[in-house]
Image (cartoon, rainbow, N blue to C red; front, side):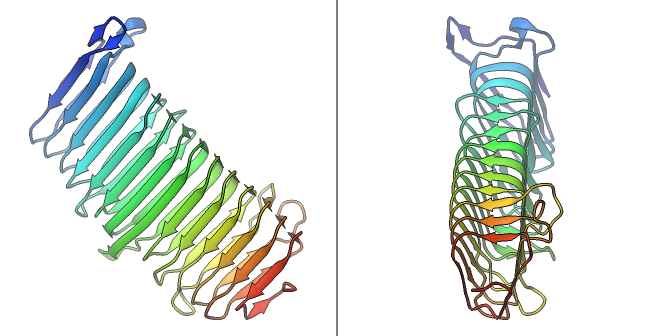
Length: 363
């Protein structure tokens, strides 16, 4: 174990010249860098902190310090690994690499001032790769979370503010990918690519995305392959385009949108389905929340094979209202597809349907 407490390292005038290099062997290691008092004891002036742990369960905790533009590189090997930054500000960037395992990385009340955070897990089907940003965490630039051959891949952005977000899963998986964004702001591009090559261990491999009270300043892009999806959008504000494509795989896809505003073009495309069981559903304003949903630009919905359903607006003019200011285009694809609407549906632009077997709309 290694502990550095209440220590200033590398202060040379106004420059950060220090270096912390910790390398632990196999067997499990604990590293703690902390400050327990106020004032200058909180400052860490190191230019770079490198922590490399061997095989076994490893923990890295960095708490209650001012990092002063320090870069952190953390490498973990097999075992149950965790990395936590709590109440740490003025970090330059963070990079965490898990080899032959996956681990949990948590940031609480932490500020990455000029760079971003990069987390990569090569799991060999041994664990779930988790990245949590919570409790007023701020990341100036990129949030990148990459998992390959992991049991599952989970990203949470809660009560936080970040730049761009890139989430990427590949290889084998069991549990699939989970994304939770709540009470937060994303100022750059949001991108999720879930592309498992195979689903093992009897798992679903699905992608579940939950958005609740989040503002996206730029494009929101979700691309899913070889798996089903459950995407829930509640109280979201999308300044750029909104693109969801679940383009391959025979699992069902469910997309629900409530109480949200879309200022850019919207494109939703679901996958092939598999007969009457694995069918897709796109539901807009079908849940009894307090607000309404408005689309300011063209909305294009495309479903592929399967007996798919598109539900537009609910039975209340105020709380289940879905307003389409521009064109609405629906392409049902193969199978028996249904488009239905209720009194909460308002179309200000043209409505066009193709390859739809049953529709309550005049299209």
